[in-house]
Length: 167
Image (tube, rainbow, N blue to C red; front, side, top):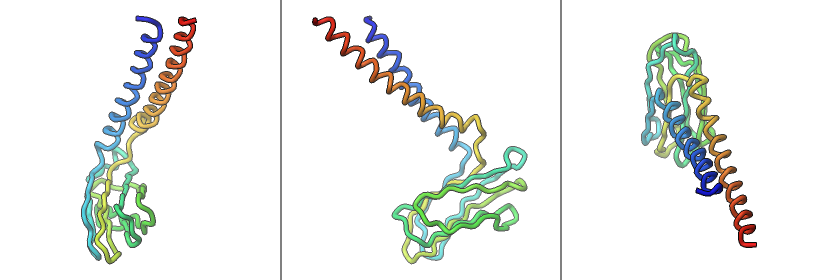
């Protein structure tokens, strides 16, 4: 195999590793999060419960996506004693937030529709991923970018060498 062929295999492998790490990183990040979705009518709520242990992590995360965004969505986080620990009025299609896990138990993400139209809502809640899990999400795009730059570089190298061999 000639040099450009070997280089294409190497940079192609780097791109492949970047893609695999990207999928694996997303899987690892979302494995502990509880998902919920539904068509929420006026005055109704979507409730997503999750059991959290404050000995494993002291921070929880939640995210909401509203399809065909409309004003009039509120979100609350309730602790195991049904005490409100976080409350937000949502003013964009995708919203993310954090909350403190003070005691172990079942926490609830409560998404309420105060708009007069039915709205499709997706929500997730769970423990904040640790630094090792987060690093996979940040490293994989860089590996992919390096691989793609390598593919372009090897293509330029192969074209220049081909011109020299025809001269």
